[in-house]
Length: 323
Ligand SMILES: CC(C)(COP(=O)(O)OP(=O)(O)OC[C@H]1O[C@@H](n2cnc3c(N)ncnc32)[C@H](O)[C@@H]1OP(=O)(O)O)[C@@H](O)C(=O)NCCC(=O)NCCS
Image (cartoon, rainbow, N blue to C red; front, side, top):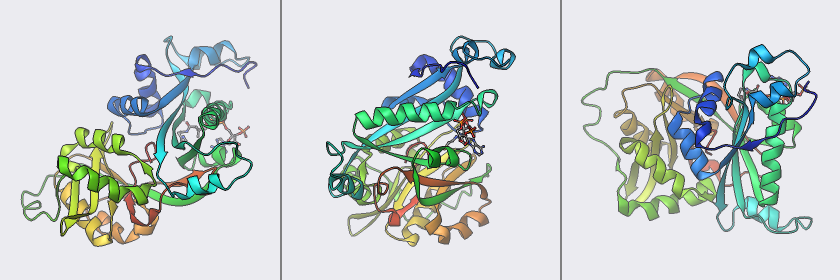
């Protein structure tokens, strides 16, 4: 255990190499564009490897490696404005002990520790730093835990709400006929009010900025389904370090979800990963038939009464780092 506690400091663009090293060390998928996007939407903190080594009474100097800005640990928070009537806001409003109503919720993500610095309390320290910030900003913390992170969050007062699982497909040759009769179409500028109205009850918070950034990053995956001029579902995607991620995908029914997924996948030849809500196991057969393989489970957790939104229409989450 370290003899003194190294301080967490804000992450900036100069830390992108250190951030990427952390993603790589855990075999996570975030690329530089992801880290830039997360730091633009929210804020991050890190602990310098050098500071951990300097404060350590154990011999980890050799493991720390060179580089002044090398990061030993990270955390990111991404705030979202809650929508009126969301259960998180309502629960907070009825809590007489809370001095002021919540300003929103925030995803706590990128809790990463380099392998040589694990089990020294760094994840706990980063999490507590982020939670302190969120308490002061009156933002309810929400996160999607890996099995490795789960015990850390449980210990810090988070409770489980619902689960999803990551599936991954390796690169394929595109079928030239597959997109012949699409059931969905690309998002157009006029669709945004409808997309946001459809997303509101599902996600429970306003993530328009995120969805617009995703539409720019992977335009061919930004699709809507509609019926009688009304949006009945949408999908977005993004590039990644090892695979493109498709999600969020929100749909009024499994049939609409399947149409969106088929049309998006018809346009992506490279490796693809999706985070499928456990309640949408109906879509799993189709994924397995396309070569998708289970990677790992995640658990949505919060310290509030419930996470925002009503997950019945959430088929693919945006990703554990985004919500
Ligand atoms: C999960 C992770 C962040 C934990 O980092 P860490 O700095 O080693 O965690 P801490 O030292 O703060 O551990 C806090 C407590 O959580 C529990 N804990 C942490 N890792 C654990 C594990 N692998 N198994 C069981 N309990 C664990 C322990 O109770 C630990 O306290 P203790 O060591 O005094 O018993 C780190 O292993 C990591 O980067 N993993 C890969 C990325 C990841 O999964 N991140 C979580 C995202 S949700």
